[in-house]
Image (tube, rainbow, N blue to C red; front, side):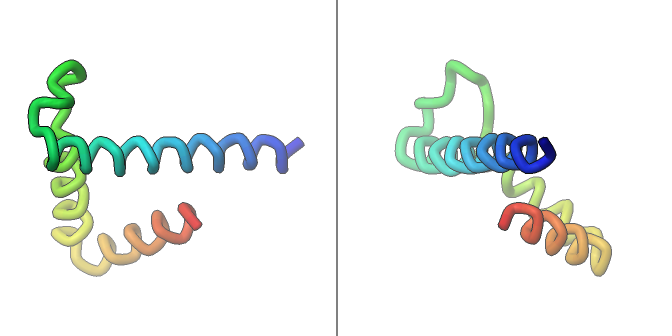
Amino acid sequence: MFSSLTGMLRSGIDVALVLVGLGVVLQILFPDALAFINADVAGNLIDLINQFSGAGLIGVIAALIVVDQLK
């Protein structure tokens, strides 16, 4: 039961990562392509990275935990 649940969650995370990557590429190549969802994908990603880096050692540990969970 838990293996099927974790498999579904892992698949959902994989799809979300692909969509984020696609959003960043589309925003770089076609700046107005994502106007219909009113989102700044690259800006939000940069803000997230800045929050991790601004938190010092705790931010580094949190970033490592996130990266480990995505493997």
